[in-house]
Image 1 (cartoon, helix red, strand yellow):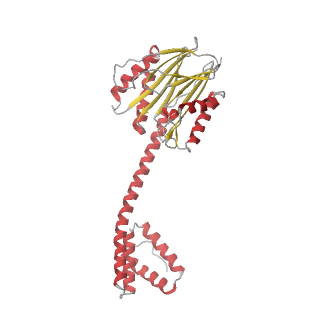
Image 2 (image 1 turned 180 degrees about the vertical axis):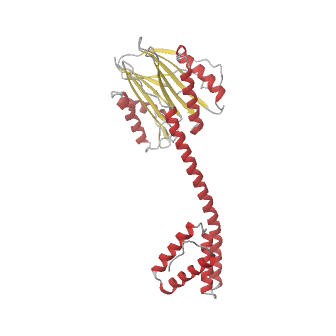
Image 3 (image 1 turned 30 degrees about the horizontal axis):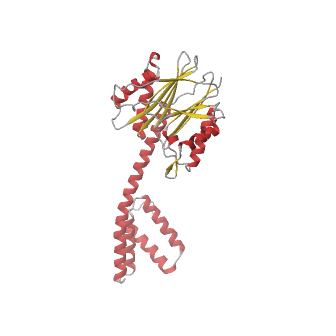
Amino acid sequence: MGWSAEMKTTNLDLNSYRQLLKEYLLTNDETALYQAEQFSRLSVKHNVPPEEMIQIHIEALQDLYPELPREINDSLNFLLEAMISYGLALQENQFLREKQSELESEISVAANMQKTLLSTVKPEVKGLDIGAISVPASTMNGDYYHFVTNKENHLGIALADVIGKGIPAALAMSMIKYSMDSFPESQQQPKAILENLNRVVERNVDPSMFITMFYGLYNPENETFAYASAGHEPCFYYHASRNEFEEIYAPGLVLGVNNDTNYQQFVRKIEKDDCLILLTDGVTECRLGEHFIEGKQILQVIESFIHLPAQEAVEKVFCYFEKLQDFQLRDDFTLIIIKKEV
């Protein structure tokens, strides 16, 4: 039995299905099952809902066996009502999946734009070995890092974390980057950078979204590192000669709370073979199950790789914690290691 290319009338559907059902009930021939499968595929192609398929079956069965027991008829009606609800739920599910697919596509485009807008080039600075890695926990990254160099070959390092995720966070990060690029070189000191950015964030970012930031400036002439923090995660200084870590803490309010906030600036000498370890809370708040990994253990992991070239070291640290968390990051992970070589 062949099928028409178009299902034009319900009678055609019913007649075709009735013949198939009768043939199968009398012979149990698998050919009828195959043709029923083709019938179902054609029904899907023409958007025939499942309850209509059930209705066709009921009518065909009642036509073939008019004296069906009441219990059978009642059970078939019960099935029909269930399929009506199923059909409605299926349509709703398909609609939501289509919307989800559209949203995922838009987020993917936004993520690619974010990578382009926030891209930064790891600079070559004499006497420094620099490694950096930033991996988002989801499609969009709420962490941000940026390197800036000026005519004097000073190295500016920005590290920020938006308290909030998704596209709004990405837009906030883009605003920060282009605001920084617009600042004149006379205002590249960490204190000035944070105070200027604080005013930008306070005026332009939703009050429910806060941004933490650490900004440092390395001067190769006197081998000093000036830095300031806007509520950011404490970073670390590694003393190679003593094999010890020292916390780099700078008090400061997160960006965007008060437009007249003043930030303190600190300066320290960077010795040969010592390292600056800059990070976000996605590193210090790594979890093992439901428990946070202790800070001491995190530093021990960093220490085990600190002898490697800086880029290899940050990648090894990330791989260690990614594996420890079963390859499911709970938060964006950003780590920068700057090693003083000469």
